[in-house]
Length: 193
Figure 1 (cartoon, rainbow, N blue to C red):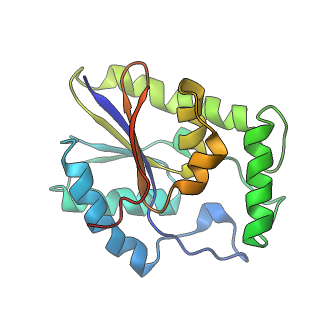
Figure 2 (figure 1 turned 180 degrees about the vertical axis):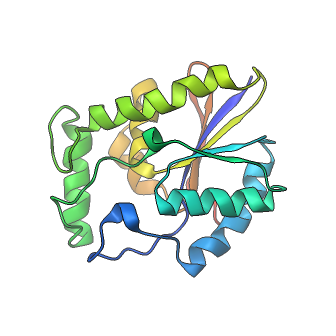
């Protein structure tokens, strides 16, 4: 049975003075793409799908280069939860409190310009057509963002989304069966050998 692998991008520069959607990979982030590529090679992807945001796109391109330059296909529907410009990053504790609220109240506009369920729905509209786009036995690798990946996974599985979100490092992977999207395994830190 084919797998859907949702990948949280590699390490990005957390610059509170810059919108999160503009953050790029750090030098360590690029280094952590090498073990990520080794891990993803086991799925034998023929192409990588990714968000258009720099940190996801840079992760995808770095991984694709290590996987014999397979194609990278960008899709803006795979972007992270909204533009978060109305909620500055602030302290880690403040950010985590906002994220807890986002997961606990998925139909409430907690911050940004979309609710958790709106973000999940948009991401889902980016994911579902991929199932029909690839061969039935082809694994689908999507390099995107932690929040939307967890929202998608939680929609199909009985999990605590906040707990899973907190465990995911940069990069990390959620492996799911298709077409039911049952979680097979979570690799909390895919950036180590």
